[in-house]
Image (cartoon, rainbow, N blue to C red):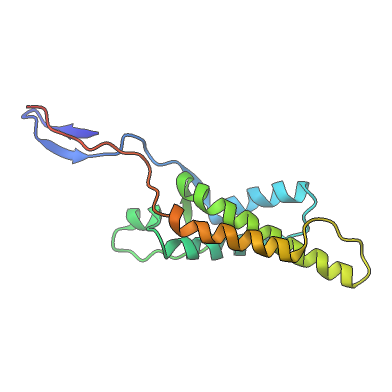
Length: 154
């Protein structure tokens, strides 16, 4: 939406819908950890956080993070303190979940080699799902939140 001065000149362009920040990488990893732990996963929170960081790094090669836009000329570190917006997470989350599935499948396969009973998907299936989700990310990275181009009132 355009903001006009009393002479009806555009003085600022703004988004119709403000960005929704979900939290930091650490916050998101804690939330996902609790969810996966309830489903029987044996991943540690640090494993999930590392998966999120790796996928955010990959995403940042295809799109500009909102944190970068807000930081102006200050370099942005991709670490546990990086904030993630809702639309960014909606693109990155399926890849992170597939990455976590792959990590879990590898743990279960390792326990099978020690004589344990395994459950869940096989490593080959998890790898295939992860590769498929990661291949989608570059196409989805070109999504931006909705906005309106302002026009002056004459």
